[in-house]
Length: 401
Ligand code: HEM
Image (tube, rainbow, N blue to C red; front, side, top):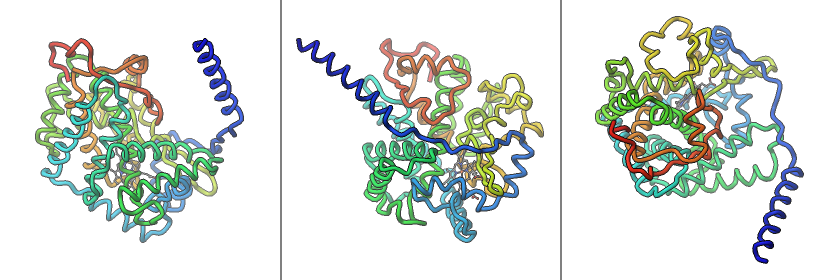
């Protein structure tokens, strides 16, 4: 009897769920964007961009995160000051790098030591990246709890998605904004309504670009490489984490791979900023970075494959022109030359040391990750991907990662 009752309740719940979904107003994408898929044309636009042309498409970020930074301002003085502040914060000595590497490794070991059977890889990567961003950019802020981190990263994610829809000014969004504001205030002591002091001014450009590329680089290196490559990567990253510096970052092995080429290749295949937007004379233009990075006419037939060794030879003019994960021209990313790539190396190195051969990907998402070429680059692609300890012990003799 109680069994029948349970079935009836489940059926009713599903029915109401479907009904609610049908009644919910449909989200409407903002349309009318021209894609630019020629490198020369894209660079030309970026070289001549104005603050206004960039601020307009980023208004959605002001709407949901209330940010006031280089991406949203039309005030040249604040733009200059903000970029100068970021450049100062980005300065990192070899001693700092070592501290960051140790901090990242300790953090990931703490997480996996408490991982019994199942964890979500995305949440693990987000927590690691968020922690390091706080340590680097907000050194005076006490370490936030895991609950705070999960709450903030989750709210950022859903607000980011909501901001892409034209009709997302509804009550759900307003309440998500308020919750985020409150928690940011608790953790940082200043909140999202604080204009130029909004902590998200810094957190967003740093955290949002980093977690997705770190996740994908880790998946490529740890789970999608051949046994031989995996062992080579293990040694490269281990040596880099032992003594992180520009030299060890660029140190090539006999196959001409280095942590640098691994990161460069990951940024080619999975650019976190897939498109750079400008509003030019009333028209929205999207420079299609992801298309340029995967164009077979430029990168050859294996454009869709993850091959760090291609960087030993591929430095032709057209490759250079088409490659712009950090943008180009006037508003090129200040983290481009060293900080961004090296931090990705550190974070991936930490994940490799913690999620080693004793762990495996779970479920059908895990099988999917191993078999799709290339990985998906969408924000929500791997939200369900879990990992856990292997039931059969270690990965095997090869001393894999
Ligand atoms: C993998 C890491 C990163 C990637 C792929 C990346 C990507 C980009 C891109 C594509 C732009 C150009 C945007 C445009 O033209 O509209 C940009 C600009 C910028 N990025 Fe990054 N970024 C990364 C890391 C960081 C970090 C860690 C920070 C530190 C807060 C940062 C701060 C900035 C700032 C302030 C600008 C604006 C520069 C200006 O207006 O002159 N980025 N970034």
